Amino acid sequence: MRYIIGIVRIFVGILFIISGFIKLNDPVGFSFKLEEYFSQGVLDLPVLIPYALAISIVVVILEVLLGVMLIIGFKVKLTLWSLLGMIIFFTFLTFYSAYYNKVTDCGCFGDAVKLTPWESFTKDVVLLVLIVLLVYGRKYITPFFRSFMTKAIMLISFFACGLYTYQVLNHLPVIDFRPYEIGKNIEEGMGIPENAPKAIFEYAWKFNVNGQEQIIVTNGDYPSVDGEFVGVETDEIQKGYEPPVHDFTIEQKGEDFAMSLLQEPKLLMVIAYDLRKSNLEIFSKIGELANNGKEKGYKVIGMSASGPEQTESLIKDYGLNFEFYFTDETTLKTIVRSNPGVLILEKGTIKDKVHYNDIEDLRLN
Image (tube, rainbow, N blue to C red; front, side, top):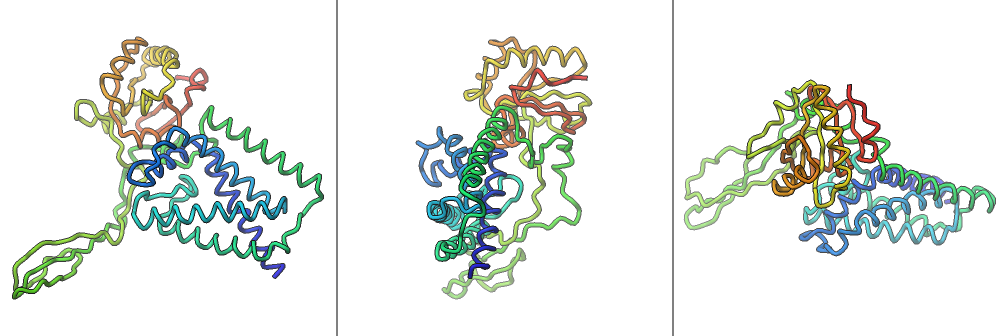
């Protein structure tokens, strides 16, 4: 039993540290996921949406620290009950999400590992069983180090999490797991391989045969039935291949200019997913950057999900010499975790990407 508890202890601890660190690398992205859970039609807790980022930071730091505490054996009772409470909550959340098909990606491992709702629920059930086992065998969980060393490790872990969080919040994630990382080509990310798996649908055809309702299930072919057709219900039983980059458009007056703009040899994108939440003061520096870019031959565009009234007002207030295009808000949030942020592209390939705090470090060739 001692060896079993020891192995489970290390496994659960490492899993919590990895899961927490991936989200700690991108707390803004995790806060977007929490906003989904808090929204109307999911948990119906819109009052918590303004606090999503703060909750995100607390949860991911706690997740990392609990993993460290479990491995080194610090405050075992508090650690185990905290882990149990957290995993019960996560299990409920993933079950609710999977059963009602509310949130299609739990965000458990951020953008590094995508899990379906049922895969997330299964993972949480396994963890729940393992943590219950640890609670049962807690007498076998003893500290690896002396008291002073254990406390020192916890203190270092806490401050390391705090410093890392400060870094990624004021700049960009250190590790970019998204399809818009520096070096990726957006157009290539939108492509679908020739042998990519296709979606499979199941069709339930309803007929009235001699006064009796008859249902025939096929994968698409219209069945040969001697009866009156009533209706059909469609169910997707297997998802097809989804390219890493999807829902990417650069629209203006209903026309999509994405493909032509992605052929530009020098393209500077200013991205602000929601101007109501943007750091507007920084647009004075962005205006200077845009002017400098145009002098060096760059095509400069703005991309936002805000309406034309807001973008036109911004252009007027800050004397911006570029136009804004409309793009889906979720896509813009995925491209850069900064509002606003700036990208440099060369024929669709992302050459550089910066947070608004780092605009002065951007070098235009």
